[in-house]
Figure 1 (cartoon, rainbow, N blue to C red):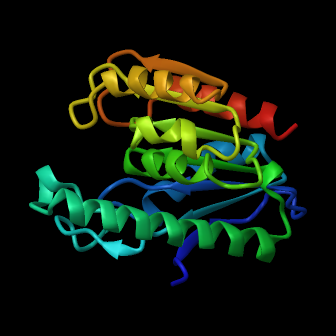
Figure 2: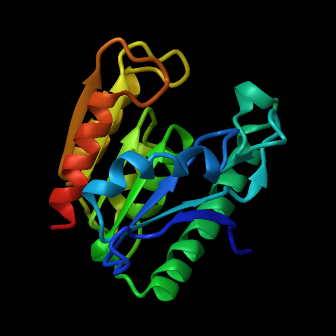
Length: 217
């Protein structure tokens, strides 16, 4: 199954890198492709892509989900695990397809996720053979941290950003993810957005841009 997606072309007309924006639960590619607007002027050779997750969201049929969330939609942990594995496979295929279609290598590709999109970016990006330029995760979690050390395949740098007033994905999730990533040998930086709830604040987006510019230089 090929994922549908939104795109914003490289401003320079000569794309040399990709930033793939990975949306959260109940959202879609259109929801996150808007992040390209403040980033693109500083990354003129970058094409921005924002895929839709494979299935419609149980709680918001207008949006998509990478996997169900049992305490929100009444699914079982088994169902969530099966769906997560299927979504990871679909996302992996999408990354392969886009690399071939765009002619851009993993070393020039960044994953930028929000919430459940952060979870998928970490789950997939660290298990791909070709190292990505980096992974940026806002307001997310590291899934299955106990499995990462034995399953990790590549170790791109990671930036995690989380608001300390997040009432959807607890702020403490960032420290847990940082510990799990460091235990697996990943170079990880973290940033707290003061007073920020479940969202992306200007300070975090500025750091994300700085990281992207450094990784793609």
